[in-house]
Image (cartoon, rainbow, N blue to C red; front, side, top):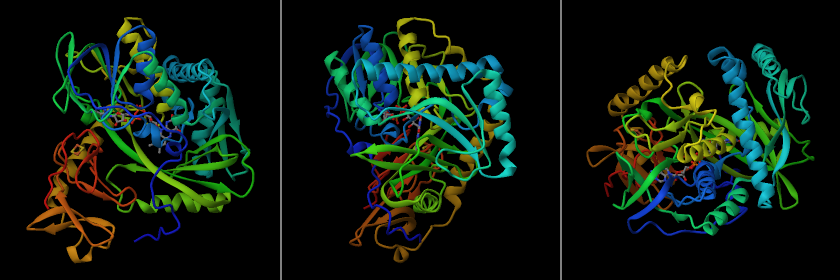
Length: 507
Ligand SMILES: Cc1cc2nc3c(=O)[nH]c(=O)nc-3n(C[C@H](O)[C@H](O)[C@H](O)COP(=O)(O)OP(=O)(O)OC[C@H]3O[C@@H](n4cnc5c(N)ncnc54)[C@H](O)[C@@H]3O)c2cc1C
Ligand code: FES
C-alpha cells in the first residue's frame, strides 16, 4: 500500500472553500418552461444565463449540487491550447476547421472576459500565456510540428526553448494571452444573475429521460415532468441516450491535482507537458499568497489499481521540479473523451431534434463549455452558429474516430466479461481499516468497505448502468465503474452517472 500520510486526508478542491453557492430545493411538482437545462456546471449555468438573457423562461436541473461536478474540481485554465493538437487537427480536418476550433475557444474566452467585466466578477481572473512542452528529445518532433501548425493557422505564439518558471525542458510552444480564474468565484455571481432573471433552479433533481415530440417532456427520477420547447443536456454523459450510442462513443478519464505552496515567487504562466505522464501547472492567488496547482496522472476511470499513488507522483514532481513545500489540497475528477478529439455539441439524435447535448470536452471544458453554451442558445433561438457543423454529434465520417470507437468498445467489453470472471481482490480478513476491495461475502463477490472502526458495508459489485464490475478508488473512497465511469459511494449511492440507480445493498 502507498504511504500517503503526508497528503491531506480530505479530497476537496480549493475552489469550493473559496466561495459559497446558494442552495436550492429539489423539484417537487410538474412545471412548464421554454428551456430545461440539465446539469449545473459551467456549461449548464452559462447556457441557462444566455437563454434567460434572451427572455426565455428557463429551469436549471442539477442531480447533486451546483458546481460540485467536474467544474468544481478543475484546474480552470481558460485556453485554446488543448495539448498538442493543431497539427493533428489540420491533418484530419483541414486548416479551416482547425482554425475554427481555435476561434470557438478564443471567442469563449472573450465572452467570459466580457461577463466578468459586465458583472464586476472578482474571480482571480488573469491573462496568462499557455505553454506546452516536452522534456525529452524523442518527443521534440511533435513540438516542432505544433509550432508550424500555429504559424499556418495564425495562432499568436510559437516555438520556445525555455520556460519562465525555469523548468528544464527540451522545447515547447507558447499560446499568448490565455487566462486562468477561480470557477466557483466566477459562477456564484452568474447563479445570482439567474435568480434575478427568474430562472427556476433545482438541486438534488436527477433527470433520466425525455419523451419524444414537441414540446419535449423531460422526466426526473422522482417522477416529475418538465414540459419545454427545448432541453439542453450539460450533464457530462447525456441524461438520455436517444439511440445516439453515446455510451459507446464517450469514455471517461480521471486525473489528479495537488495544490500547495512553493518556496519562491511563481514566475507566472500556465504549463502542460506533452510527455507521458503529463503534468499541468498553474498558480492561483490565495489569501495574499500563491497556491500552486499541479495536475496530471490521467487514466481511464476505474482502471487504476491504487489511486493514491497518482497523488504521490504529483507531489514528488512538485518537490523535485518546483520546490513544493507543503501540500494543502488534493482532489481528482473525470471528464469525457469523444472518439475523434472534438466534443459533441448539437442535437442529441434525429429522433430528438429538440434535445441539445454538450459533452466530450476532453478536460478542456472551461472555454469549450462556454462555447457550447453559446451554441445551445443559438440552437434554441433558431440562430445560425458557424461552429454547428464542426461539433455536431451526428458527424461520423470520423477519422481516426472509428478506430478509437472499436478500441474503446473492446476495452468496455473486456471489463464487462473480464470483471465477472476475475477472482476476488482479497479475503475479508485481509481488508485493512478504511479500505475497500472486491471480496467473497455471503457466497458472492461483493464490493466491501471496512471503515476505520472495522464496520463492514457490502454492496453488489455489478454497476447498475450496464453491468460491468466496479473497482475501489482509494483516493476518493468510491466504487468506480471501468466501463462508462459511473461512481458510487461506499454504501452504493450514485455519485456520478450515467448510472442512476444505486448499487444493491448487501448488509
Ligand atoms: C482534473 C481536471 C482538470 C481540468 N482542468 C481543466 C482546465 O484547466 N481547463 C479546462 O478548460 N478544463 C479543464 N478540465 C475539464 C473541465 O473541468 C470540464 O470539461 C468542465 O468542468 C465540464 O463542465 P460541465 O459543466 O460540462 O460538466 P460538470 O461540471 O461535470 O457539470 C455537469 C453537472 O451535471 C450534473 N448531472 C449529471 N447527470 C445529471 C442528470 N442525469 N440530471 C441532472 N444533473 C446531472 C452533475 O451532477 C454535474 O453537476 C479539467 C478536468 C479535470 C478532471
Ligand atoms: S456499466 Fe456503464 S457505467 Fe458501469
